[in-house]
Image 1 (cartoon, rainbow over the protein chains, first blue to last red):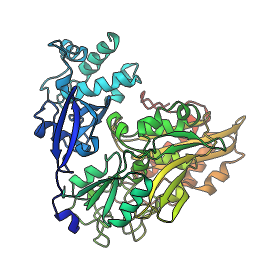
Image 2 (cartoon, rainbow over the protein chains, first blue to last red):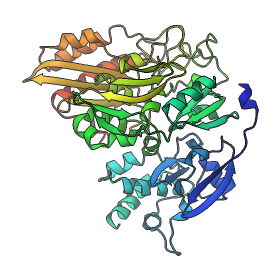
Image 3 (cartoon, rainbow over the protein chains, first blue to last red):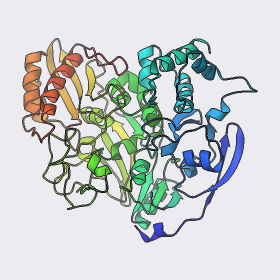
Image 4 (cartoon, each protein chain N blue to C red):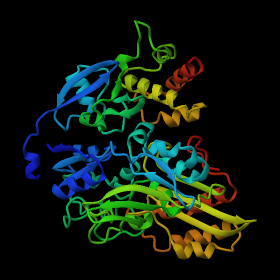
Length: 163
Length: 338
């Protein structure tokens, strides 16, 4: 370990626009966006599954694009707009994707669901998925160990057809 | 993950200055591979230099009719760029065969070139690995080497390069633009990654104080006859056992130019100029492509668990070339192999 790394750097002040609210926090450089959301801002809807970008449970939208928050340093997202699962419902009304996941029973334990819904929102915004095969391929970064995949695809197809 | 210092580079010159001033520092852009490796303590940089806000995000026409892709263009931005889709569909296809939508949104073009092997022993700090620590030994040579190299390996390292994008770039004869303390230079993509030799800890010919600024695509995109076929243990979101990027130029059914790069089989994208030359003037047939595959794989060497990859590669080469010849490229969403 190099000498510089032995000194704990000062915390770095950053601003995040989280679900429309401006939040200011002080983070050490190695704080991931995932840990900042969960541990600093108490937004525990975003899940820590594998913490290595392999499961997709930590998926959030940053400036409208879906990413793995576990592989992102919070300090690098200073000024960014973050949408987590807590930002989907509006005035008590479920987001169409949330409603579609309920309508199609698209989860069992629910642990992957926040990441699935954030990822699906990113997929819809990107506009590259037409048929079920394309949805499956472009959702392949979100694992569901309960195996609710057919219902997840059906839920996303419902949300696509009723924008 | 160890503690580290953090700096944000103001421009490319500042990034180079920070690199030269802080030995042990690393650049970070998308971070998808670096942060993962830091969590495993495989990478232990003393400082991260954030280059993600540098103005290297454009795709521009070059004077000779090619494209210059900024090093910070996200993988997804490159794959879905209309100019890339129209003129370099092989590249778009290869990128969409790799990683997940989330990772492609984060990962940069330059970072894709710098990503490290996914050899399980490289990731496991409890085992010896010459790539992690020079001269510590290789655990894969007599270990679980089912995914490992069949070409260009050494007695020090049999790891493979995991990139799909680089395989397409190799077939397209892409160039890498590099900036450093003594100015700018350009390197062929096929010269960028190294074979392991006795120094597998050095993946590329990029110097420690240099930064990738762009990848340049030459004018010829082979948009009519191309295919990227990736064979892996599951249909999506897995690294290649074998992948093949193939492009052809045809006059009737006769081949006037063929380029084939292999992924998943070596420490770098694998091409053979001699084998490609021998295809010129030949008809695009299974027989000729089989002979080409034998030639490209002539020096393939099996380890204890990966011998199947030689035959897998041979068949994948023939199949991909037939897809290219018949202008029916492999779909990355509809997985049936035609």
